[in-house]
Image (cartoon, rainbow over all chains, first blue to last red):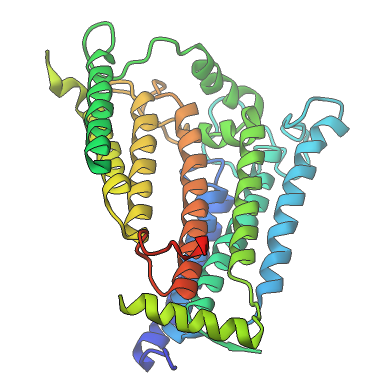
Length: 154
Length: 110
Length: 116
C-alpha cells in the first residue's frame, strides 16, 4: 500500500523540517538561559521525523542508527555525572562551572544571556537531547512500520 | 453487580479527593503560596551564584536533582526497549499461524 | 467555603475522576489508555499548581522582571513526569497493536482467549 502524500505536502514538509530542526537545536543549546532544554528540544526535533513519516510514507531503515544514538546519549549522560566524582566532588556536581573551559565562563551579577556559562548543564542538555530525539523517533518509526503504514527501503 | 461496586468506589474516591481539596488552602485562604520554601529559595539564589545557570528548572533537573533525571532517562530507555521488543519481527510456524488467523477472524466478526 | 480559590485543584480532581471513570467503565483498550493519559495530566496539573505563588514570575533569570520567582522543583518534576508519560503511553499503545494483531479485537471482554 502506498501512503505517499501529494507533491505539495512533500515539498512543504521538506522545507519545513529545516526551521523545525534549527528551532530544536536552539532550544537545546540555550537550555540553560531561556525556557527549553534537552527534553523539549528533543521532542521538537522528533516532530520533524513525524512530519517526514506522514508526508513521505517511506523512511530508510535506520533503526540501528537511532539505537546507537540513544545508547550514546544515556552513556554520555552517566559519564558526565561521574565527572563530578572524578574531579573530586560528589555525583552530579557541576565541576566545570567557572573553570574557564568549554561552557565554563563566569559572569558577575545576573547573567544577561552569555551562552558560554553553565558548566556541565549545557553538555547534559545536549546528550539528553540526543537521547530524546533518538527515543521518540524510534517509537514513531517502529509504530508506523508495524502498523503497515510505512514502506521500508532496505 | 461489578458495575455497582465500581460506581461506589468511584463515588467514594471522588468524595475523598474533593474533601482533600477543600482543606488544601494557604493560611490566608488563598490558593497556592506554599509555606515551606527554603529549599527552592536556596535553588533560586544558588543557581546564579554557583552554576551560572539562568534557567533554574534546568539547574534543578541536571544538577541538584540529577539522580531523578538519570532514573528518568533510564525509564525512557527501557520503555523504548520494550516498544522494540513488543513490535519486533517474529515468525510463527505455518500451523500455528493458521490457527491464530482463523481464531482471530472468528473473534473479529463477533 | 470559597471554592473559587481552589479552582485549579478542582480541575485536577475532575481530570482524575474522568480518567478513573473511563478506566473503570469502558471496554475499548484505546479508550482505557486515553483515561490513563487523563489521569497523568491531572497529576501534572497538581504538581504545577503546588508551585504557584501569587504575583511571582517564572524561575528564569534571563531578563526577569523581578526576583520573586515561583518554586522550580515541582516544575522539574513535572518535566520528568511528562516524558515518562509519553514513553509509557507509547509502550501501552504498542501492546494494544499486538493484541489487535493476535486477537482481532481490542475489546477487553473479548480478549480472553489466553485461558484455553
